[in-house]
Length: 71
Image (cartoon, rainbow, N blue to C red; front, side, top):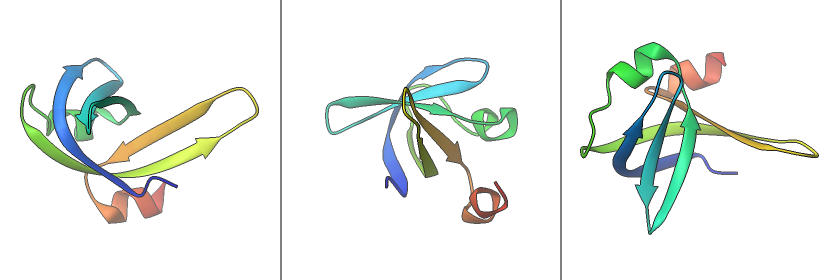
């Protein structure tokens, strides 16, 4: 599982961000409050939770570990 992700914020949208780390852009779904803490071009660290289904991989990002545990 991907427990956290550190990298540069390259895209911000209404319900997700793309964080580039190690040459890969990870699309991370997040709440508005978490997205509001991110800035384009800035380095960030997000706690993450990966959900694996038959037809999709969903990566969710959280500002704090407590927020992730609540999820």
